[in-house]
Image 1 (cartoon, one colour):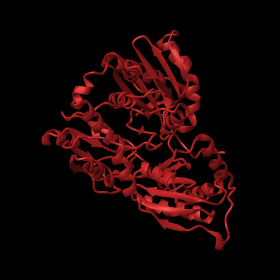
Image 2 (cartoon, one colour):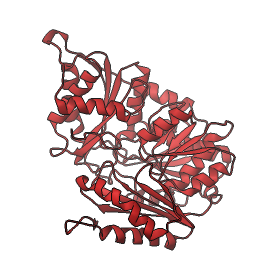
Image 3 (spheres, helix red, strand yellow):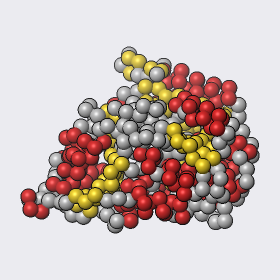
Image 4 (cartoon, one colour):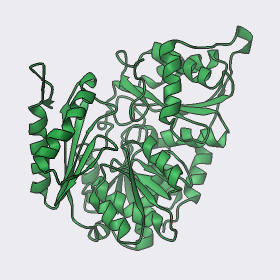
Length: 459
C-alpha cells in the first residue's frame, strides 16, 4: 500500500500528485471511514485550484452518504472550529498551506477539531488504495449546505484576547485565507491596521505564500516607514503567524515561540509542547521561569496529540504554527497574531525589548534534495555517520529523524514529510558554530552513495 498522507495532510502538485480523481476518491474514502453517515465540514483557501478540488472532494463525500457544510474561503483554523461547533463527524480543508501556487492538498480533522492522527490516516489510506468504498443509492446520497462561520469564529477569538487599544499594526496575509479574519479581528481589538496583500488571490501576486524573511521585505519596509508597533504575516491558509518587530526586522520563529510559551504558562502549572527542531532558547526561557516543556515530532498533528496527552496550555513550532487548545486544537494564525499583541500589552514593552531578555542562540538551516524512496535508507545510515562525525559522547534522540546534542550545540537531520528533501537544522552559541555544524553535515550527506550514484545533491 502506498502513502497518501505526509506530515500535514495530503499535498502535492496539482495535475501530477493531486488530481480531481484523487480528491473525489479521498472524499469517498473519508465517507466510508465514517460509516457512510454524518456531517463533514469543508473549507478551502484562495488557490485557483481549490474550488475545483473542493467540488470533487464533496462529490466523493456525498456519494458515500455524508452531508456537507461548505464554508467557502476560510483559514484552516476556522474549519477545525466549525467541525467542533457544528458537532460534525469530520472536517476537511483544501489547502497546500505555505507551498507555491501550483500545489494543493487536504487537511483532515476529527470530530474534536483535531487533525487526523496516524491511526485514522491509516484507515483512510487502506480504503483509498484498496478501493474499499461503500456508496449509497441515488435516493440516499448526502446534501450540501452553505455555512457562514466567520462571524462566530471572530467573536470567539476576540473574547479570548485582552489588548490595550491603539497599537499600530501592518498585516500581510499574502493574498491568502487570513485576509477575511486577521484584519477585522485586530480592528475589533482596537488596533490601527494597515493592510498589505490582503486581497484574496490564488496566484499570490503580492509574494510567495511562505512567510519567510526573504518574502517579507515589503512588510518590513512598511513597518519601518509607518512607524508601526508590529508587522504580522500569514501563509496561504493562515495556520502560521510570523512577526516583524517595530524596527522592521523579522523575528526568529524560535524566539517569538519562546516568548509566547512563557506568556501562556503564566498563572498555571500546565506544560508547554514544542518540537524536536525548536531552539534551546525555548527550554531555557520556559524552565527558567518554573515551567515544564515537552518535545515531540515535527508537525502540528504531533504537537496536537502531545497537547491532549499532557493537557498542555500551549504548543507550537518554530514555523509559527501555534495551538491554543483552550480555544482551538488546530494551528491558528489569526489567534496567534492577537496573542502576540496581548503579550505586548501585558508587558508594556516593545517586541525588540522583549527579545533582549532571551538567551542568545544561533540557528542555521539547510535542505538537501532527496527522492522520497531513498529517505528511509539514508536516515538508517545517518546515525552511525553523524555520531562518528560529532563524537560518540553525543546524546541521540530518534523521535523524529536523528537529533544529536553535544557540547555547545545540537543537530537535527530529518526527512521532510511534505517535500523531497532532507532537512538539516543546527544550533550553536555563535552564528559561525551553527553554520559549521550544518556545513559539515551537508558535506557528509553529499558523500553518501548508493550503487555508485550520488544520493544527495545540494539544492
